[in-house]
Image 1 (cartoon, rainbow, N blue to C red):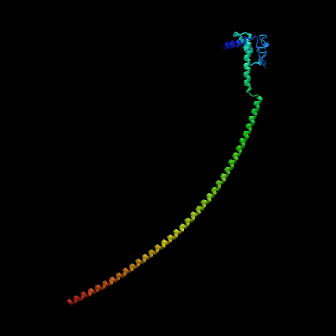
Image 2: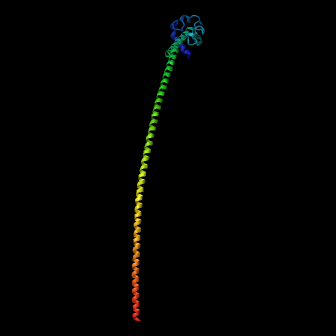
Image 3: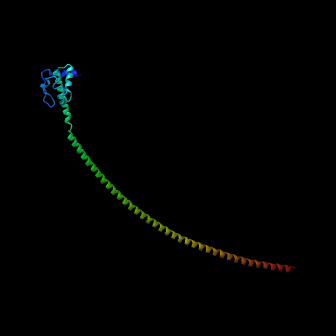
Length: 227
């Protein structure tokens, strides 16, 4: 796979005898690339300018069958692509100072938010406590009113009961008086009836005695006249 890529890239570079590379930071000049075999591609000379081991990469390409110029051209192209990719990636990144500044800003915002939340919590707690105190006061007032209403109702009920008891006593006294009057009247009627019976008995006895006496006199007169 590396062989096919290197041959295709080498075909595009055969037209020129030398490769001109753009002057960038961390990139060697063309005369340095085509000079001594191990000068600019040494792993220790300028390795810090590249993002990979250029000397090892060139040797790998040479082992694949490429000549020195083709290997150097491919390495330079790869270095440019990698450098461009890294620059594109790092362009969207922030520096450590910006990151620290952003972190400090977040900490400040978080501290401010925390203080605001604590203040809101304190205010809400104060409002809840005030509302609770108001409710307790209203409940105490309601209890007092209910207690007074119960006492007033009990007093009214007691008064009504006492009045009803007095009325019932009066009614009972009246009924007892009427009963006594009826008893007296009945006793009087019974006494009068007894007297009438006694009178009737005496009258009947007188009539009976007179009748017996008359009958006896007639019987004696008859006996005397006959004998």
